[in-house]
Amino acid sequence: MLRCDMKEIPILGLIGIVAHRAMNSAKGMYQELDMNRSQASVLFTLFQCESMSQKELASQLNVTAPSITSSIQKMEKAGYITRRPDLQDQRVMRLTLTEKGRSCIQSVKEVADRMEQILFEGMNLEEKLLFRRLMLQINENLENYERKEKA
Image 1: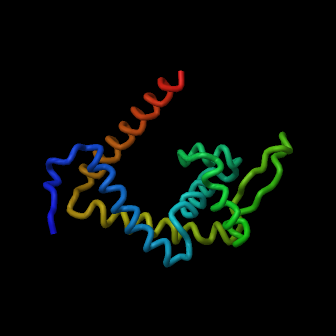
Image 2 (image 1 turned 180 degrees about the vertical axis):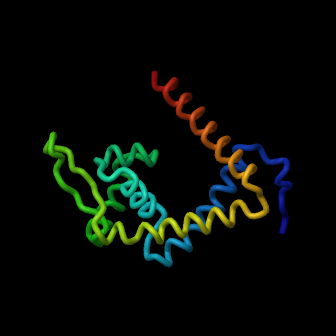
């Protein structure tokens, strides 16, 4: 099997390769919970924020509102989330976790913890904290770039 020298791959390519590999590993773990990564992200975000509109949720997950419609519908049908009209604006539907949804959060966290163990094996706390800080800075840089592009 022909393999490229990973040290020669541009950072953008490396980020893509690592993200893809990590998501594939997590996918198998989420399947054990009868869930996919998108649904796990929805659960965790709603757990952190209590109640959100689909538009707010999509923005938080950095996707379009229509792209999570299917996940939301499946999760509502399975009893993980509910949709209720917003008290201030009846046109807006608020998404919240049900008891069943809340009971899955620990399992979702366990998958995230397991993935962190795999990703950061052989790294000390200082290296992990530095990586996190750098990822947050990269995310902020991208947000700033996107704002400038829209202006």
